[in-house]
Length: 266
Length: 343
Image 1 (cartoon, rainbow over the protein chains, first blue to last red):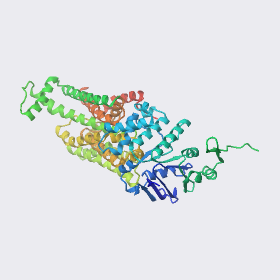
Image 2 (tube, rainbow over the protein chains, first blue to last red; image 1 turned 60 degrees about the horizontal axis):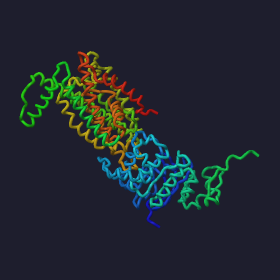
Image 3 (spheres, rainbow over the protein chains, first blue to last red; image 1 turned 30 degrees about the horizontal axis):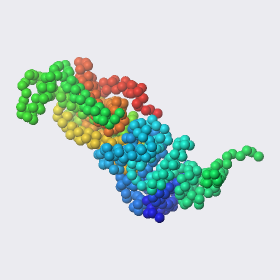
Image 4 (cartoon, chains in turn cyan, brown; image 1 turned 180 degrees about the vertical axis):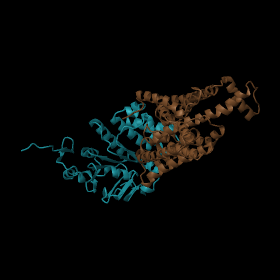
């Protein structure tokens, strides 16, 4: 197995002034080509976990190692060269063109007083081509759809040149077609050798991505492992506190997760 | 609009500034023809640098009015207009909010308190300026210290601290107005808070110009970083931006620019809000072009406003009155153009 890019060891985090930790003793690692999907109920601490990994929260116990080095000791700019982050789709406050927005991914390669050169723009254009969104290039980021904006954000993280990409609920607020499109993109990025960590509310997305899973439960424990070991009917029932079935569809050759729905009164 | 077009537009704004500056030098109760004005200015250069003075086609009073009265005054107007506009532009990017002005962290309120205190103590004008400068810096220093006290690094906390300090400072200001002698001190405090360049001298300009120029250069050099900060703290951080450091540098520069402006001419409202929006409407929201555009358009606007201030009536009109009267309709028009997104 290849050398892990990110290693999380016994990670425990509690907010200042709170005695109960949000989560405790979380351990997992991702290597090149891995997809690690984090499932968790609302408020289970998924965002807090991502914020620890991206370096926004630093008051954690345990260790986060990026390429074998403790995350806290890596300077911000160097960290950005190794790890890219795609936030949830939101409308930006200011209006930049897609091309000017994507080129911001080159920031860790440009000095404090610098502005992007033609060469940096060439890399941005390459990422825009890779996403197949050339038509959007000169449009304003506030004037494109949510699905398009997510592709633009992924193009931006690609220009950053990091080999680990963390995505926060990348399929949120997208229509059905766009959700699958984003999953396809994530899959192909991992096939190119990038390591991917993402959070989602959709068990089906975890099944489609066919990577490794971490289920963060209400007590702050995470069960991490291979898809078929971790993503079981009973685990999902408990996680979402609802009646559901994990059914195998022969035609597709995979499982799907469906809610049982409200039963008629007898 | 391509980057190339935007660069040409900036060059155009620079030409507009030079043109407006020269026209306003000529205008006044004592009219000096443009050609003479240009010759007087050019003569300074020719005499000072090349030791080859031009043939004198003007009289002494023309030279004195242009060089000793109008030139320093318009130079101050350029610095103040550009300084307040660029501070507003930088703050709007840093705080991710298109509706903030350079007074956000309490710099103007602090400077006003400093100036009022010096007026109450009967200080000379230089001391009033220095006291204003100190008051402005002190207010921002307290503001940026409050989030550190709570170990909370968010910009919301900083904005809240700014509101608190500005509120405190304005109460101190009211106290000083209350105890001031209404005949002399109160009127000069009130006049000071409305802004004027009437008594500006070249020495006043030279006192603050170096610090302001350094701050201009720094903000313009960091203008692409303002784009990155405008994405929000966590996103900027993930792009490798040392958010607290860059934000701190920009706040320092904006404070220098605003405090120096206020110490030269008192407080002037609206310009720091209206000019960045106007620039955005014309050249787009990319700070790489918007910030230089704010410098140039803010300077031109202030030069025009000051020319109105000294020529509209027999006596000087305070600058804030004119910027407010001109600025608010412009802002309504900007809202109508839907370039200011209010949700």
